[in-house]
Image 1: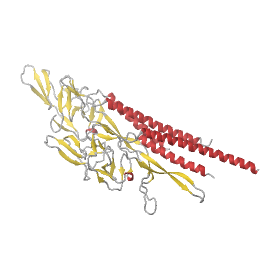
Image 2: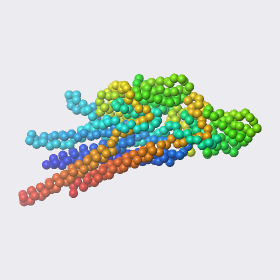
Image 3: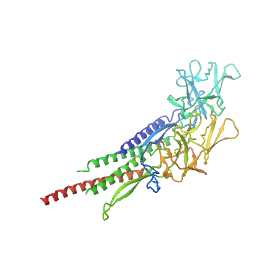
Image 4: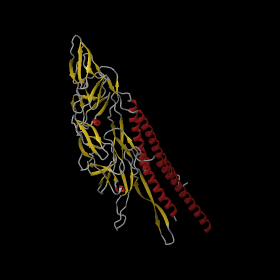
Amino acid sequence: MRALSIAATGMSAQQLNVEVISNNISNSSTTGFKASRVEFQDLLYQNIRTVGSASSDSGTIVPSGLQVGLGVMPAATYRVNTQGTVLMTGNTFDLAINGRGYFQVQMPDGTTSYTRSGALQLNSSGQIVTADGYQILPSITVPATATAVTVNSSGQVLATISGQTAQQTLGQLQIASFINPVGLEATGNNLLKQTDASGSPTTASPGTSGMGTITQGSLESSNVDIVTEITNLITAQRAYEMNSKVINTADQMLTTTNQMKS
Amino acid sequence: MFTTSLVLLSDEIALQRSVDVIANNIANSSTTGFKRQGIQFETYVSRPTPRQSTSFVYDRATYRDMTPGTISMTGNPLDLAIQGKGYFQVQTPQGIQYTRDGAFRTDNSGQIVTSSGLPVLGDGGQAITIADDATDITISGDGTITVQTGTATSRANLGRLGVVQFENDEALTPTSGGMLTTTQTGTPVMGNAIVQGAIEDSNVSPVMEITNLIRAQRSYEQAANLIGMENSRLTTAIDKLSQTTM
């Protein structure tokens, strides 16, 4: 009976669905996190009687064939790139991107990663770094004599130096955008990596060429909607139960067959 | 002499197949744009002699139930659902195929593609490319795509998605991955068919499928019981008849 293996594909698909939902829920407070969704597709079909085949030699055709599908497969997981709510924190180096774009992060191995999480800090030499201590590109160093740092909406970093009246420009933040941001590969720690699917990054100053703007003293919260996730979780669990019911039924039918000649 | 058993056997074979179809429906209860399949049984009448007739069960065909699925909102600008009849056209290596699964995205060159990376075609059979610096993608009800590029004062029109419908939905053959093929030529759907930021869920109704499953299982048991009873009737007949002849 095909029903056994068909229902098994259904169960494993729903299991993956629950795993993705649980990751979304557990990251519902992660800064800059984007919810993922699993996309399912049907598997191949077996044509037992082909649609459109002749049913007589006078040219009549079968209006619909006999086709049995062989189950379901997860096609892709899919980041939902909607804007998360921007929450005020008041911290100088908490930067939220409002719109398109990612901060560029210099990884220890020399490569560049991308992040929406703007919870930044200064390291011992005054460079702007992520929570893991990785440098933000282009590198900006805040002098120890700075009393206040302002990051404006177009990404200019300005500092008030003690003893000076005019603000000093320390640098210009650049953000990167991708033609297909869904194609970026998540590597954990809020970081994303460029792939063949994402295309190469275009960098620009915030607020120019379609890039988002920077809001200082704020963080972009996770875009996970708990109500949606819980609803999806219930649906996934019920779908899992239904598939197990099919396996049960197929099993009972096979038992019936085995007991036929009693 | 074995006619009874053979009739019941034809029933069992058909019921097994219908359980396979129900299993596939349930497995695809979360597949975007999936249409449930139903199975049709038919009587096959055999007349070995003019005065005798035996009816066998024959699983004649499966059909796609074209009831619309629930439209669920996702918020993704490239998730599209079709209200009413119609299919998106997709360029595959095997030629143009059709789908109702509107979970689209852009690829690394900005083309609108399906989740398998196949280009989605516009009304002129062209692939549609969204520029890198485009923001605020809007797809209207008739499939017209407009974007805001850079600092341009007016919105750029990128063309219209080609949604087509067919005379006979049943004559579309599902391949896999939500794709359908047909030899029919489609007619463009006009009017407000597309909902942006939403996908069409599978139209599988759990209650119906589970009920059908139970019914199939019980019919199967009944047929199996009858085969058992027929078997013991034959055994008894052979026993009794051999005793009288002795």
